[in-house]
Length: 265
Image 1 (tube, rainbow, N blue to C red):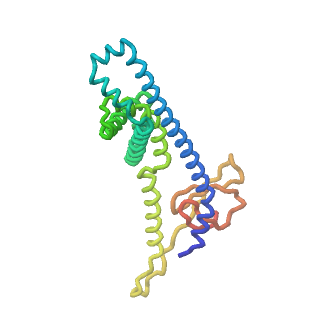
Image 2 (image 1 turned 45 degrees about the vertical axis):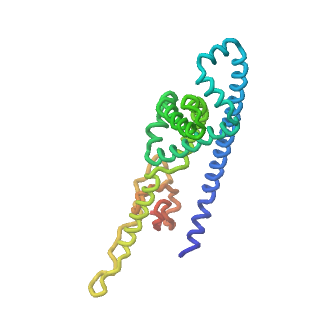
Image 3 (image 1 turned 90 degrees about the vertical axis):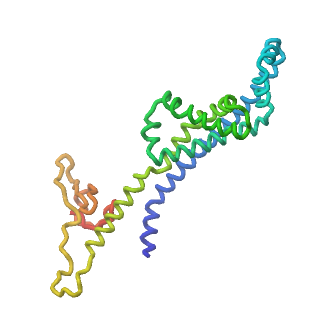
């Protein structure tokens, strides 16, 4: 194995990798701050509701309402008697788990590109936010037995607040299948072409030609009068277009796309 070749490739791509990692870390830091803010707001909202409920049940109107709606009053009291921090943590973590999982899945099957990123805010809320809130509510209700209405009320905010950033993160850093298949198909085609071009003749055939004549590795294009001193050419191996100063003609280079070696015409 030619380790120097791999070392050269890594050295050339290191700045791009470093830039990508820096961008990813900054995006994750921003997302982490958003998650923390949503969690704090959810805890504060629960304590605020508990305070309002305590004030409301002390009023005459509240006592009359509790007498007429005993089951609902018991359900509200059951929800507000839960540990606020644990309940908020469960709501945010469930929303985050489902959003990232569904975001990755939809990115792989091209749904995010066509049915989320291209839609407006209203359609995103109607066709994505509300169904995902209901899904998270079912899971929260299964864990805490709060009732479906109360569960939807609790998870709607974290789901809607984290949905867009979760889906954008998945679309930016999870490749679609064609992003992986196109380079692999090109590498496979290049490898097969190289194998075909380097095929040795049959040893039993003494009159066989040692190697078939091949065309030029690069084809020069017509000069553009608007760009004097610039030469254009096309790599015969992959069709990649090259432009370079005419003074570099004759220099041996490699195609950036397929690494086919040739002399600049």
